[in-house]
Image 1 (cartoon, rainbow, N blue to C red):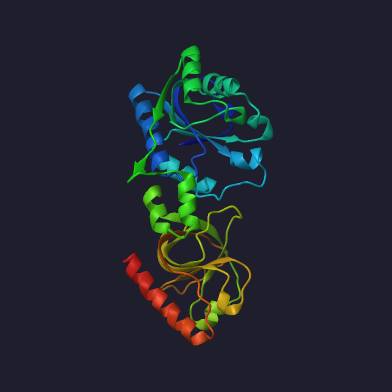
Image 2: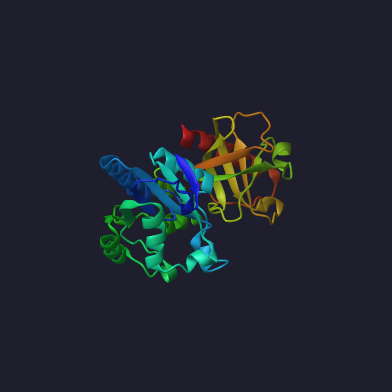
Length: 309
């Protein structure tokens, strides 16, 4: 898959293409259906498939400080898009100037002048241009003017629940990682670099990897979870009991993500790892002494084994 920074990176002599556009945070089942449809139509037409997305999240530029929790970091999103068979990922820098681009100019500059769209595939709730003034109906009218077709992809739902990034963020925020995984089609993932913490877990016999995560990442609600710890550089996956919270037994104040990798004795410091959250085991509990905490941690480990078996 080719990766372009900006639509003006399209090479000279670029032919027609099938384009789909969106933030695509999470790459959930609805996004997968939209992108998959674009890829299939591109192959039918014998042209290239292009996914256009944006960085940073448009909300942060339009309403500074309102950046929603990120479900999928850029590198992971690119991996997932590539796995869908896309030919080109075009990441458009979302700047204040770009945010003021009128809907008609958005279509002309991106879809017509640079990507030479033969077909545009978008979700039925797609909006574009300054103040999100453009919708699918306007896109269809402009398509008739500029010579491209538009196909809307229906929203994906199960049991009356429409899958959306907003819905998945709510699931993650509530600690319902099972519902989040059902909408994503895979476990919710949090990535970070392993840094040194208080070393308290090592003293207790449960050494943990303390993850330093991006400030906007969607971290599940405080509690204990069963997860897979993925060592990105080693292509290794380890079962892990993960604690999210402030360590109330020790009067902690800093919210942390700490993973105890079962049956692992190596050193993870400095590694960038990922946690794929599979099941919520319990909420955070404050204990009066170390002994009941240790007993609970042993139970957490056994419940993690069963959840991941």
